[in-house]
Image 1: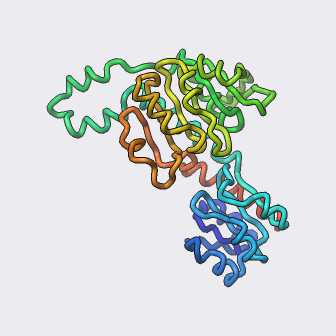
Image 2: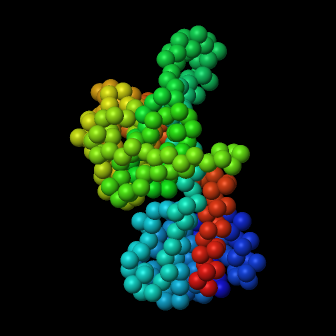
Image 3: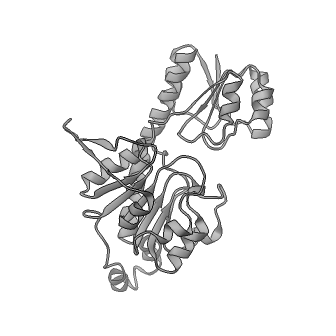
Length: 314
């Protein structure tokens, strides 16, 4: 069976498939030529990440395409319902990247609470001549310990964030109308395990009680607009590592500009791959280019999970 990993695939996953006798191609084919390439090469499995789309037109043009896999969680770049209605097996890797996304959340938080984004900009420019001034400017950092973190969306990634927050001594609260069980396990390096639970709250109540709100819900529908951001605790921080459209960027900039929010971190944007310049240049934003799952460990897990699902269907 021929498999095209059009947005790349970790070698760990390729090895699993090749040992099973399958051919994995990692040629990057332009979107406009993809259907022809799939037909000409006899591709039966298409693997994508976020760059390549699999819409109805491509699905119709490739009757020999049996499977479409998404390396990651969100499948908004695939016409999932249509593909499944046509008998194609469509799948993703929901469990593989949770830890990596959660760690990125805390990388942003640690940076924001200690002014690291600004310090990293200013030290090369003025560190030699204004060292003591900069030291004074960044003297009012905050600790994560003791803070209340509100997790919007309590699925796999939300629970991974909860585990790390609990380990840091934070109070964990959450909002997710689709989750009845708010328990999560904290597993220690020596194998010991502690089971605890997050306190679930209505959205506005969670927003008003949280020192930090972090977003981990699916879809691109707006959930945090001007009214919701206004209900957040004054001086709070916001992190969005879910989808760009979930947070209204204009309302977020207003909340930062008027001082209601102390800072925000974005790994996702309304306009990808060309985020708005006013977002990119804002001094109170900590930014990364949609790299939540971009660790070697997560990519290995994604590759292996994709491979195992393909083999189960082969």
